[in-house]
Amino acid sequence: MIKKETDWFQAWFDTPYYHQLYDHRNETEAEGFMLNLIDFLQLKQGSKILDLPCGRGRHAIFLNKCGYDVVGADLSANNIAFANEFANGSLRFTQHDMRQSLNYKYKAIFNLFTSFGYFDEDETNIEVLKKFKEGLEEDGILVIDFLNINKIRKKLITTETVQKEDILFKISRAIQKEQLVKTIEFEADEQQFCFAEKVRSFSFEDFERMSSLASLEIIETFGNYDLEPFNHVHSDRLILLLK
Image (cartoon, rainbow, N blue to C red):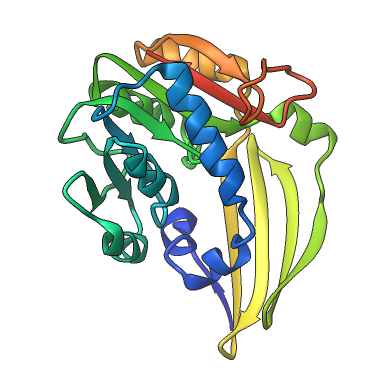
């Protein structure tokens, strides 16, 4: 029997297989991105930063090592349990749904690695932006690291297989009903699994519209982790700074 999950972002991210599939993520690239951001934002040592969602905490841990007071928040209980092994007096982790209000205000909120647009309705995604805004200090900055849907549309890899240790992941991608859908099928622990990652296919113009409705202003855009200018056609990423 194939196991299908309705709340993909809650079920899939909470499995060990998710981390197994994505274990190739480049730590050097991630740390370079963080250094570029904190340098551009001129964040002072000790500033309060929120990483939401934080996954297993790789960005939050590095930011804390750079001298910041960091909170990592994620919906996955397993991720938070893992990340809590690295907690200290200036690095804390908590389970949190980004649709809910934040308890504190931060100098910067980081929403990284295409962690926005999980929800089908525009209203819910706009509500997430409003929650982020409420969690910012008066002069705080929100950073959203999203994909460049214009490039994805032209160069979409529709099918591929990825071998990770003893698991063969069969992956297919399609753009359906304003969503980028990535279906992942595999066999593990004598079970068949099927998960579908679904992210809204938001463009820069969509973010402009939603940000305005959430009383946020886009003040800067970048097209990659080196913070080079965003190009609608060629950039790999759409990185937004909002206040």
